[in-house]
Image (cartoon, rainbow, N blue to C red; front, side, top):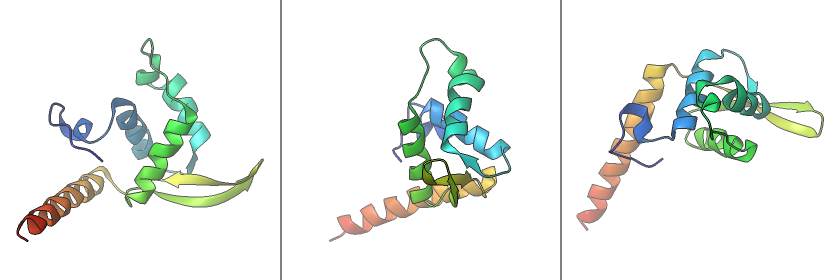
Length: 118
């Protein structure tokens, strides 16, 4: 994640379409595949209804996997057409998510500060 201080709140660390996906994940209480998220962001979301706004399925998958790598999203293995795939699950509440992101930034800043002392 990168910090963009020209934006506000979560938009400081994620793109607008990513924020829309996050809001969707917070509202869905069941495991969700990348295809469903991709269809929703491009066709069902307010962001996707704006002229010129569309995002590739690969970008959606990379964002979801980045959240998994950052330990902000979990996944379950599922089988289906084409073999195994991930079903993503948002197990954190909004406050828990925000705390985890803030803690990650603070720990990174502390590490940078500690390295500068050397």
